[in-house]
Amino acid sequence: MIVWSGRGFLSVLVLALVLFALTSFLPEEQNNMAFAISLFTSAIFSWFMGKKWNEPNGKTLVDKETGQEVILKPNHSLFWIKMQYWGFIFGALGIFMLVKQYM
Image (cartoon, helix red, strand yellow):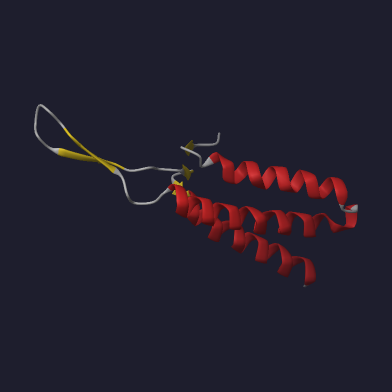
């Protein structure tokens, strides 16, 4: 079960689409390379789009009954991890795949 908030599911969707495209075009012996490239692509996408979409500037609302201020911030996450941090996770997995392939 995939748990996401906002646009967090796009990190996995980009990973799956790039992986599908690369495995369709690259020869079968390059499947490990296709997986590493798709991880790096998804890492770049997740980092930049997560930083853009999870900007800390939220809307401040005032509750009429209590007078308290409530700040609404965007939350785009996947498995309770903010989208931009998935960039590090996907990047580390991509490096692991490359090291595993060439060792």
